Length: 373
Ligand SMILES: *Cc1c(COP(=O)(O)O)cnc(C)c1O
Image (tube, rainbow, N blue to C red; front, side, top):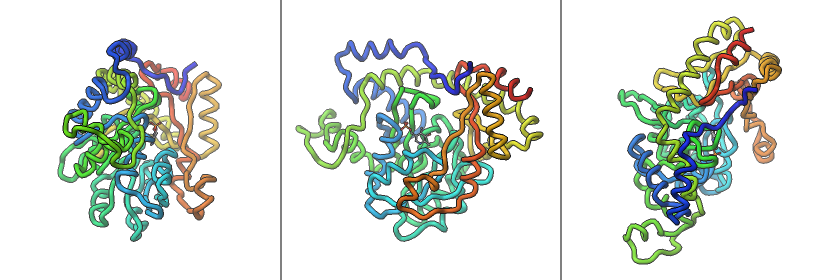
């Protein structure tokens, strides 16, 4: 049997967890949290990074930080996970969904500007499969209309965008704020875990306060104030040192993990391309401004029937392939308070996209030969 996903373990996870436990400091913001946060800031150029218990939490922090008020509008793709809109809906926002690109599930940046109204507050690009959205266009629109950009970089660790200026920037370092996930289905895992990246300095102080339940405990620990207290709204967004210790064991192996995942991805890509062409199946697209972090290998079938056949064929050979993201603009929850909308590209991915197994220990050959026979 080949599962869809199998969490990768570097081997040092339990060692570091034991170290954290023995140190007597197992709540958050200790040694391992700091090691992880510094790693992200140095490697990816985030001005400030804060570990969270999930990407969902990091998105909720972002919605608080940009001060979303009831009735504010937030533009995002409909082809995404529910946490992307939920974080903003929790603060009373109205979600305005934009269609996906014809060649990629990412938001179609050419359709954003028409959706902007005086109530629009933010744009939330989701870097699907870890492949960058067209960030120059999105940031230009945001500057022109005075909007915030929150990158949903849940799938985008160690992936990059090269802008018009020729500079290659890590995804998550471009928008005002960004959210990453370390859920066990992502490239780098902690079971459940996430990260808020703060790139606009105006948010750094308040981000720490919201993270620590609305208190200025972080500045207290740094000796900047002589007592700490309740200074703002907030919640318990920080993970324990046990989670951070696990994550640190993963981060130490980032390069090895990425190398192996990319080799699997390249194998799928080269061996399946002729077969895909013959069957009118679309292979994953990586725009020339983007890099591929091998988060996901997906195919876009020509029809729902073809996708069902492929999933069934793999399944009868013990291989689990899955589809996901039922268009959120068609979801029962969204339609309770919003009008039905026509987003044809989103619906195409909902009906036709299938994800093949992709994990460190995968034997891609068995999946490929099953598909080709
Ligand atoms: C995985 C994922 C999330 C949620 O991440 P959690 O860490 O499970 O909260 C949000 N958005 C996208 C696009 C994701 O893929």
